[in-house]
Length: 65
Length: 410
Ligand code: HEM
Ligand code: SF4
Image 1 (cartoon, rainbow over the protein chains, first blue to last red):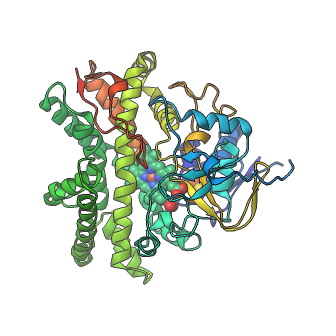
Image 2: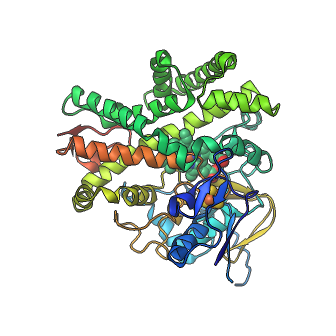
């Protein structure tokens, strides 16, 4: 599983960071989503899917490999 | 799904909106009936007389709010206005910051302030919020049994937090608090409310003028510096944004402190779970946000393009009320939706909206609510209502749901 984050679409609500702070962060200078891991370990899979569905802007997607 | 035109009802048969509640803790019963139909229905707004589509199912509400073809412009001809304004008044409405803007203008303004509301930034504010909550509870206890939770805790906490956030100097706190109280008190006349709003607007302009000189390291100071750096600084625009932050973050949070406290007191088995395990605070807060979804119709829009929603064709120009309350009680997403369950994972609620306008202050609101509930029930373990919950004055006809007054004892 690979995560894609579209930094032009993100509105910085932080839902992803709240869901899995090991995978998602917000840039200090712009508050926009920042991936700490593009290919997170399997233990993060559920949380990442939850974050994708909670993201209000459609900035996050998952590319199955 | 086949697309169909909704049957054209004569105007006097179109259901009136807002719909009535029968229980202060449940959404209007009509919401679930509409939800069963799984399609948008037309409603008639009682105050403005306008007709709009009411959307109630979770996926349809999210679909509409995430759609690029909807507008938040309050001055559009069919926008589902909750108040009755004449066309002249609508034309003269001050251009709102952020919440009434559409992309790309909206995106530019939102990006200027995101950094001030990140998860990390709000975490840093927690110790100050804790102090503010502790001071408010000292004040409640000093006022003695029978004191009003709203006056001593619910309203002052978010007001002080916003002072802190915006960098309102300590010496001005009383002036600021008095105006915000006049703005929200049900005892104020419309004229008094309007005057308080204007005075706060003028106050922010003065505050910005002062901060322009030494650009302090607080939110407004930083926004002045950033705006000057890229040549976009506009004092009046920033004052309007400051005022929006005050309005958007004050009454909402206050009402949630009151409603959440009452709901927990009325559900002692849920309160006992929370008291036994403070690790349940985050899910408790999400569940209370979900159950009340107090800004139900803040998520109103106008369609800019034709769109199909739940098999119905919504035409360009039609008004839309994407009900955050109905969506947050969709039984397909939240089983037994009217029951309060502090262990439920409720984060898919739409209490903060959805799409590009999703609440900017949501992480701040979460922090304030967690700290307020935790501190209140820890420091006042014997807290109870001084009047039965069903006799409290609920804000049944207000834009944001809440309670006017909550007398408590301990
Ligand atoms: C429990 C408390 C709160 C609730 C239920 C709430 C609810 C909402 C909702 C539903 C929206 C979306 C409106 C729309 O779609 O047009 C919104 C937007 C907004 N909220 Fe909150 N809010 C709360 C607290 C706060 C706080 C504490 C602040 C900041 C100090 C804040 C600032 C804003 C702003 C600036 C917007 C507009 C965002 C935009 O248009 O991009 N809110 N809020
Ligand atoms: S949840 Fe979506 S919009 Fe919010 S910060 Fe993460 S990517 Fe951005």
